[in-house]
Length: 314
Image (cartoon, rainbow, N blue to C red; front, side):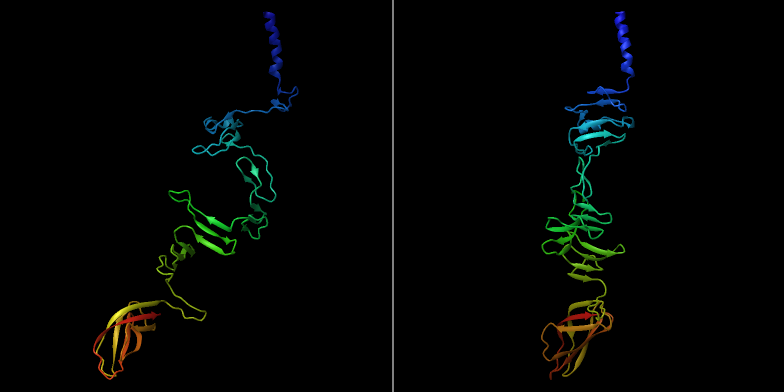
């Protein structure tokens, strides 16, 4: 027994002292610690699910750990596809695989870098759907009925809202800018709102709650040589006309809030005026309209009530 023991002891040093191990080869490469060679078989690393991989509890000292994930992990785990992973000391990383691209921007398809995208980078210009962008950014539809840029945003209780859509309809080449939500669309400068289109189509300029199809809070000018207008006001009022002698005349002063002097005043009666005429109407003092009535008949006119429609342009 002693001789057998000594013989085995003499055989151990060559195994311990060798620096390379070869499997399937008698001449392992000198720079490797393990050289595996085969023409019919492969290397099968440890196979773990995404959950098992996440529970390994690795640290920086475990950098280089290699596993094959057998499933497509979903939240609450990190969303990681099935495939080969290595640990870089902090995170699990998918080895970068080769892909091809001919003028296209490479994209990651979950397993490898692929060149089958519609995003083209020409160095100074970027094209989406076109290989030859004419501007710094050009978006072109290859098959869809419209070419458009859509901006969306997160919304409470929903994944996203429909947001803002900007584009050109392919069939008619009509450009459009659309707010897809039941909300207003507003425009501004210097971080201040200047114009708004509300959800029912009313347009407000200088007003964020337009009450008409066009609601302007400010001055208006129509035509290159037109006069700048501050506003148009209309009101329907019932007034009392005093008694008027034959061929006589009388003045009626009517309160009209907002009226300014030198404004243009238009008056229309709400009923027929047998024998009576309106001589003129004017803003006599701020906030007051003066209307002159004339009795053109041969009879005296008794006091009466009359409805007047008054318009003021100023």
